[in-house]
Image (cartoon, rainbow, N blue to C red; front, side):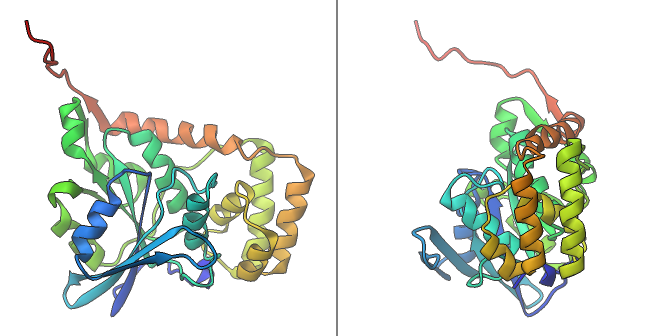
Length: 287
């Protein structure tokens, strides 16, 4: 199954596939346990030693959801087996794991820019996305206040404030997931001319083969990743795989160009919704 099978607007069905994505230690496994309780199973993804955690939960109105706790990842340009699995599931490159109907991306409120890096990559794929703004209590202790409505407007996706370790915000998250999630509207990237041209060329080929709503998001992920031509060919057809190989061999672009462009796009979002307050710092030493 490929990304083409993912609707641009998720709609309630008898069983919704929900994936939890986020940086390592962002709190998603804590939420996974809170949502699924004992209704979970743990194994490995076929062919690798990366742990696969799945469970079930009820969202309300008789709607049930399967929950997949993706391996922790900083980026969809993978540098580890865990990150490769997360990328492959979201792109529909794994035949053993269908892509989700909706993704909950965990964002650490005290480290917004780094966490939005992954969130915007997911959103560019056109997958309905919900932002779980976690650790808001810790951020407040550090004098950081996040304007959640402003963040929601800036990134074009629902934002739910939670404290996963205390169960705060879980009812609101269930409510949001029980309803259709609109197509995300992430901030636009200004790429280098070479990477931008490569993305356009591959996106055109992707559109011809798959008819996706967001071919440029998928094209960028393929260009800036290490997915094999064989896996790409199985998921999106040999013309896409051949074009990808041609662009990679041409070497006219640097995948690292995405990093600067993405942080440049994220910076004004963070500035618009983050407020820092003076925090009384207590001396930990005693006389």
